[in-house]
Image (cartoon, rainbow over all chains, first blue to last red; front, side, top):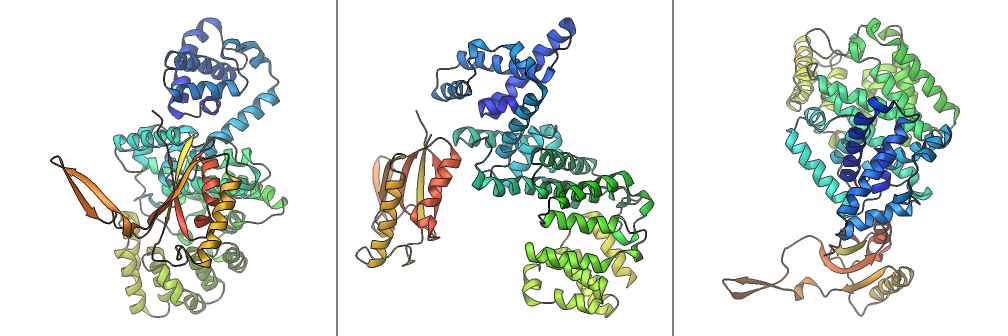
Length: 402
Length: 118
């Protein structure tokens, strides 16, 4: 579908074409056997069918534009030569596919579209999720999600949102945008997971797969490898994160034997590849922090000093309030809770994270060994800020234990 | 593809909308002239608008023309001018919009809207 989309710059048209090609394949392949390059075959057939359809409908200007776009890619609709495409060397074919997938992902993650729409389009077009599955994962009705996608496709077509690889001077910013969307998809699955929502976990695994795709497509960008490593290293702990009752288990209390050692190994290997490119960045630093957590045999053996140093670096390159919150926790663990609290209680940080429940729960946690009364206040503030049942149970447990 | 680039800024902000005879305005105009020259091939039309205090809003009710003093909607930032540009795609339109002096100088924002073709 990536190939077809690159041709038409129109998602609906590409979807229709892919559908047509699949139908033709279902009819022909059982009789004539599988072609040598099924992917190329599908693309060519889809393209040919779409051209037929565009021709039939080529009254409006838009359709003519699409025809023109097809022709500008030097493909004469009358002369599509199946054999020629199928005989292309494997390398040429895979680099063609690579470009087309890049165009698709840059288009789906175009900053002119709303962030949720970018996530949904990416999941729909590159991560094989259906509209119904995406709707379930985002907790909206299927019709709502379908409508959102229709509106997005309309904007893409009316405003000519380009599905192309951005020019060099925009490439870094746009690649960052793609990574942000993949990361947000992962978070959407991770943050709201309450142990029962299986579709939420599907978002996490889709995000890992997408991160791998982005890393494959941008092999020279260490941050893409960093993001892939980061998601692998977090995903490795997912089985231990929720107990038999569906309750969240804090990192320190998790049963480390349930961590997925093969994902940890893969995450570390990917991170090594990133670090060898010698250009640090926020995703690589976060991956390194998670690697330290994942490889500590027990919670007590966690190398908090190293983690604190990494967070200090992260604050330098990405000084967001949430990063500074995490740094404060690392300081508390590496040194003393009082020193961590001193960072948390800075007016500026307190103000910007006033409505962030993790800020109050972290404060409550640090205060628990110092002042039970103030710890309780902080945890109750956190409780008031979350509707997630698993998080609420966890906070109530902590308040009860004070 | 044709796009309208609608230039919004705060009329009350003297830096964004200086007195027409002032030096500051002359400077802004230098910027607009340069933009016009650089994008001359893409620009189909473009005008600056007099402030919303000069606007009249017209509505027909039961066949009668009803006029109201002032703009259609009170907003924090007002439409002060526009360009119609003809460029290949939205990225090109965004790149051009970013160079319009009010947006380039951080004094306003540009709404980019595709023009409907009938």
